[in-house]
Image 1: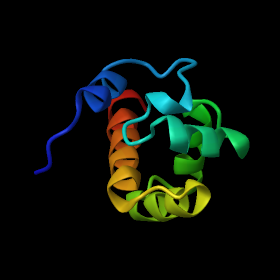
Image 2: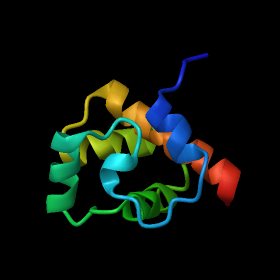
Image 3: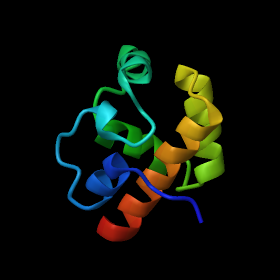
Image 4: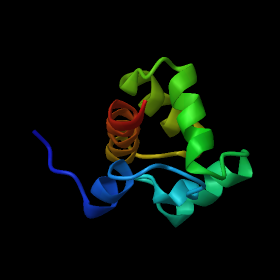
Length: 90
């Protein structure tokens, strides 16, 4: 099983609220700017896309790679983060 980052644990451990997109695991400043330019400025907007893709982590990871040029490990980290957040709060 893969280990998670402190950023991941912090995100999954509390309600999302109005956090910026860069609060998501795997999303740094560069990917965050790319997502913001497409209207994905908040973590909950990215969560909306994840939910539209029926919480399918593989489909979401592919979408994220296409949307902002995320590398596989970044996209997978973000997908796992959202999946675990959903399991905890939905």
